[in-house]
Length: 61
Image 1 (cartoon, helix red, strand yellow):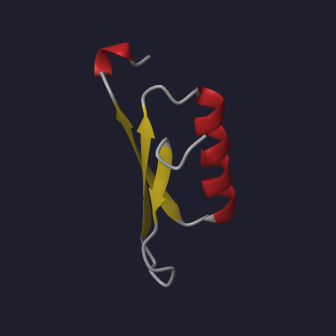
Image 2: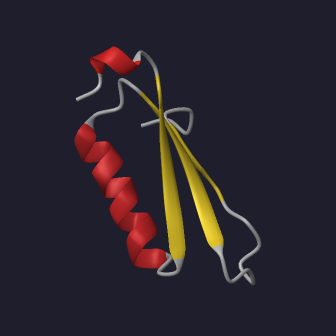
């Protein structure tokens, strides 16, 4: 997986309201997405994650 497939934007860590924005290419497989989400959930407990899938929405399940 390349950094261009999935990347996160982290705010300053002293913030009480941390939001991570993940941008995921449409063709990225589910296992890769879930492994990265597991990493974020396990390492950043006080976060809200917004997921944006880049691509044609009618192909999404």
